[in-house]
Figure 1 (spheres, rainbow, N blue to C red):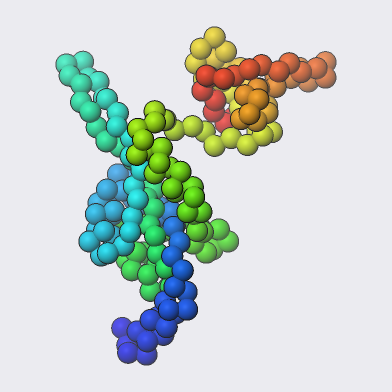
Figure 2 (figure 1 turned 90 degrees about the vertical axis):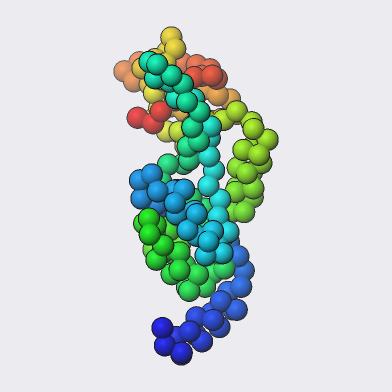
Length: 180
């Protein structure tokens, strides 16, 4: 890089000295390699992982897998130089962005996730559901039933009969739901 570009990037880093968490998209099954490389570069990283037991017909094996396949978190200042250094790391596809700009992840969300994993609270991936979305129940006696998700507090699903203009609310606590 030229001297003037280095000075400009350095001054930008000072102006934007605030550090934020960002989500990175990585190549398939490259999350751990990316995190190792970024850590060597002095970048603070976080790769949430789960421990699972994989079973085969002849054996069992405990494996550690990324909680969010294809994603890792990095804490950076807002400078362009920091983001560029991360983007040049092999295995990095890019930052999770909104309107073409890297979207910061609220620090409290990262900290809550860290706390859950640190305390070994049993957890598993769950569909990201919003009230009003159409969902389908997976498994159990309600397998295949579709309806409108009410909210996490009530844990209810609304099943409607359109032609009768009638609906039934069903408690779906303990059932796995997927978006339709």
